[in-house]
Image (tube, rainbow, N blue to C red; front, side):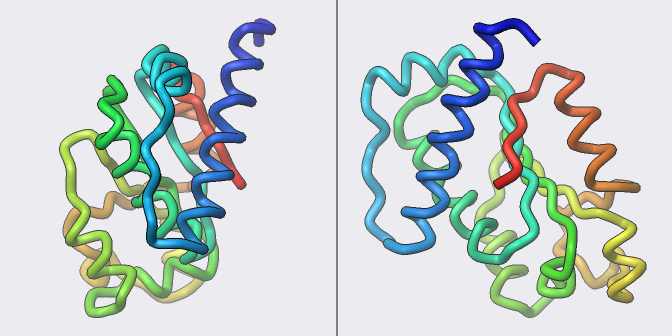
Length: 152
């Protein structure tokens, strides 16, 4: 990875992590400053690999911040694995959150391996959630496609 790409990835990681932490602690959203908007406009594809409910909630708030700040990006993906997959079943708070936060630039992927382990079927998931064979493989795949990927 080139130094410029690494620096950009680190910057985006720090932005996302601070946003996830702040979003989980506070419902007050602050606009992203102009310098950050200019930097993030250079990143058309972003992804977060998450396994905690509070981080998933924070990711939705961060996505809203990106939209509200007029950042020009093409794709934002949340890849979910681990025990939190059980909380994706229809009727749960997390399921309702996913259902109410649909956007053409947002994709939610969930690990089939975690689904099998937790006995969650595709019918249990919100309609918009896309099962992927393995969360880690998916993250590597989208990183290979040029996405900036963050796993807090």
